Image (cartoon, rainbow, N blue to C red; front, side, top):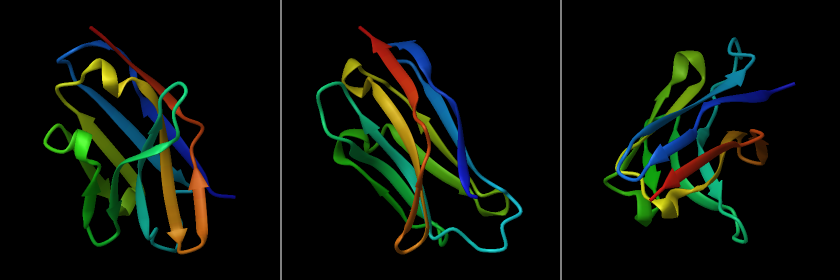
Length: 118
């Protein structure tokens, strides 16, 4: 059974930084995960894309986070990191790790809360 183990998140003041980490377990998987990334869901809103990275290193960012967030991936450890800088209250949400193992096989983490105070 494939699971995503998330860490990071918490409470930070506006302008601050946080780092989210997500590891796909078992890390000794014999397959290479096609894409990993992060989504977020704010209260009363739909879940939305934050950033993704493929196993080839191609990244994609949502417009609101471009220039502030950086996604990176360690393929050997099946881990993805999201570095979030210059956070603002609009970034407050539950952040979910996502892995597309292969097209059509998606796995989600349980979510981690990020709260940005003004």
